[in-house]
Each structure stands twice: as structure tokens, then as C-alpha cells.
Image (cartoon, rainbow, N blue to C red):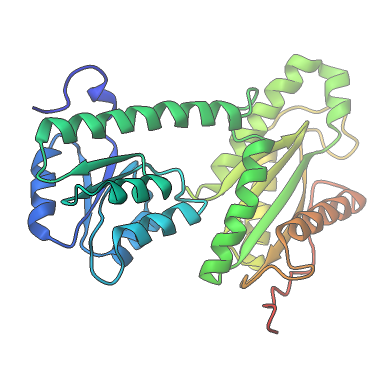
Length: 322
């Protein structure tokens, strides 16, 4: 039986990660789940975590008993990582002891399948978990999407900033942040009206997204006519170069702004703050300080005449030991 009924057409494109130290067991699962187009495999816990971090799957089927790092340790590591915590996990084990199932559920697993595997049971439980995840993801997108522009909203940004900071700490990488303000937007609304103002914000959001480009970067509407751009693994020089590209991309939209004292078209001011390589939050070395510095840099850009970018001094990002 393949998951072709009901909502299967919406789940077979999901990404599944199968984790078992027995290649034979993985081959069995592969045959059972052959209708799914994106299957990946790991034969140990470390590889499973690496693959999950590289490209988070939609569902993980996890063997409980593996050498060195067992399934329980893998599940605990997944749930401790904010970027992976929402991935549903189904434990697969030959143990029928209730204590195994209880421990898996306590760690945050969504389901528990005992070996020997029944193909219909595995397919139905996988499908059900994927459907639940789809519904949860849809609700999350509705809550974190700006209704006017269709990009991420302030809530999404507030969730992403500490998450990207922790990723930067783990990887010892740079993290940059831009705060962007549409210049003299009140004058724009006064002259052209609020419907035109809404269209302007949508066009600016489109320009920002096109200029940023990388899938891992975030463009969010921070509030009113202010936007935020979060740039993982981006050093100060690269952030400054991108800011100039963003500023020009908005100008290239050629949105008329006869009420602006600085330009005949809509322009933006940009404040840039960077940290890294990030090692540990300590003292002033925090996500909140990164945001505060970007805000200060944005104020500096406005004071400098607008339609420009200014950078704050980078955070040193020293570890607590230093």
C-alpha cells in the first residue's frame, strides 16, 4: 500500500530522514516509503544531526538503539536546537518495553513504531505526522507573515534573531543585521494617499527580497515603513556592500515621491550592525545589543541626510573566558 489516498499528494514531496545503524533496516524503510520523493539516510547519530542541520527534514524516523549516540540522545539534541525542535520524530525499535516508548515520548517524539515493521502502519503514521506538520507550518506562516507585504513580520524577526545568534555561536561565524527605513514616508502618504503608500511598501519589500537573494537571509517588515534584514554568515564588509545594493534597488523601482526633499523617487536609509565571529553571549555581546547598534546606525544615516547607509562599530564577540 502506498500513501496515495486522502491528502497523500500533498505529503509525498516531503523530506524524510531515516536513521538506523543497520543498512538492512534502512532498505526496508526505503521500500515501504518509496512513494516519498526526498529520502535521506544516516547510519549514526552524528551524521543524522549533521544532515538535519544542513537541510532540516519534514520528518525523522529514528532507531532507538545505535552505538555511540543512541536515538534518545539524537532526539534530545534535536529538541534542544531551536532550528530543529519542531521536526516531528517517530521512533522505530524492536523493543516492546513500555519504558522505551515512554522515554521517547518524554523526549518529545511524536510517535513510536515497533519492529517488525508493517508497511501499512508505517505509511499511515508517516502520512499522519506529515499532515499535522503541514497544518502546523501553515498556522505558523499565517502568524509570522506580514499581511500587507507578504514577507516575514516583526514576530518572525523577533523569533529569528536569537535563533540566528545561537547558530552563529555554534558555528563561530559572523552575523549582520540591517535596519531600513523608507525616507519621508509620512510625506508620501500625505501626498499620494494610504493605498498608494501600501503599494509603495509592497514594492520596497519586493526590492529588498530581490536584492538580498540568499535563501538563509531574512527580510522582515519591522513596523510601519521600517524593515529588517538578518544576514547569517555575513561579515561587515559584505553587509556594507549589500546595503548599497539594497539602496540602489529601491531607487531602481522609480516610485515617484514628489514630497521628498532629497529625491524625486522613493529612497531608504540603512543602519548596519555586525558581530563575529560570535562565540558566546556575554556582557554587551548579545542579540539585543546587535539590534540596538543597528538602530543607532540607522539614526546616523538619517542624520547624514538619508538615502545612505551607515555602519555601527562591530561587536567584538569575545567569549566569557576572554
